[in-house]
Every structure is written in C-alpha cells, then in structure tokens.
Length: 61
Ligand SMILES: [Zn+2]
Image (cartoon, rainbow, N blue to C red; front, side, top):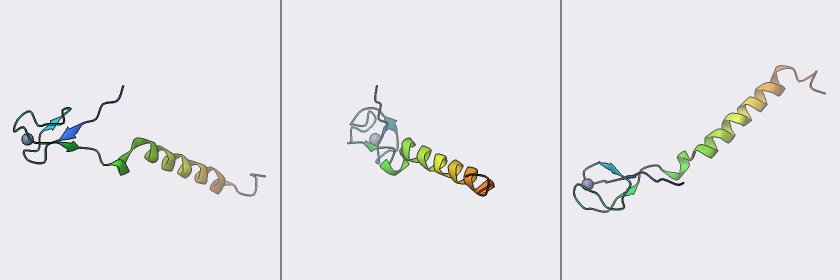
C-alpha cells in the first residue's frame, strides 16, 4: 500500500487528498524525492562497508 502525504502550500496543513480540506486549493507532495528512504539506506550500508575494510586492511585478504 502506497500512501503519499501531501501539503497545502497556502495554509500549511497536511492531507492525503490532492486538494486542501481547509481552503480547497491544490496540494503538493510533502516529501521531496531526494529524501527517499532507499537512498539513505544505501549510503548507510556503504559507510558500514568502508568502516569494515578500513579497520584492518592487511588482514582482509
Ligand atoms: Zn489549505
């Protein structure tokens, strides 16, 4: 199930509807694509990997 939280730029209220329940204006997606959870997870895993190999590079092979 996919839920997208939207925000009204006019009054600042959050809603799941494409129109604001308060003022009836069009809403926009509240979460920018660059904050996608998948991307953050990949960066975290990469850091862990670098730490692992950075600890003892001589014994890795
Ligand atoms: Zn509104």
